[in-house]
Amino acid sequence: MSEPRLDIRTDVIDLHRQFNLQDITVRPRVVLRPMMIEDAPGMLAVLEADPEIRKRVSAAAGMTDTAGVQREIEEYQVDPGLIRYTIHSDDKVAGLVSLWTDEGFFGQPAQPNTYGFGYFLHPGQRGKGLVGDSVQKLMDVSRATVRVDSFIAFCEDDNPKSIAVLTKLGFKPTNDTFTEPTYGWVERKYEKRVNGDQK
Image 1 (cartoon, rainbow, N blue to C red):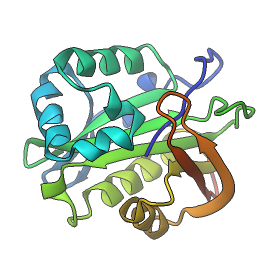
Image 2: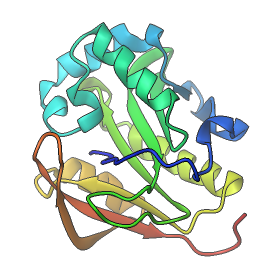
Image 3: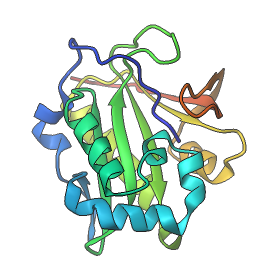
Image 4: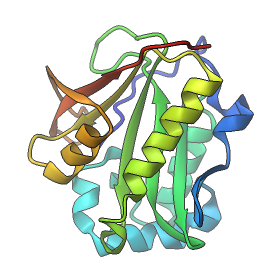
């Protein structure tokens, strides 16, 4: 699950200034918190438990040591359209969920009011609904905080577990596939159109 990004735009809503999008309680004993350097040991433990994550998630690919985690933190903190959340379950790092604005990916024009997700989870924490519940909560909070017309995600066709999460959340596969520009894997775009009253 990637979040392919191009040059940072300055005309997007600053997600970091949205109070409701900071620490988020997903359910009892599960919290999303913007990733901080003290999360590095736990994040690295997640990635060591499943090294394949680095081959499927661009945010994880560079997190090979504490300095790599620090770089990811510094990059998201200066990007108004990106927040990387650490999933904390029972006060331990269980994984990561990224929320980002569609600023124009793979040469496509930016899509206003469109927000995307990328995620990964410790293999020992899978099957508990942590990613699905985290993304659902982020969608709910986002819709209550900013105008949302659509949610998107990118996933490889040979990643059935992530596809199952997206499908359960109401995402639909599109005919659009893209090659991740840094690492070269091919991903399909998934979309969930949003209806109803919005800000």
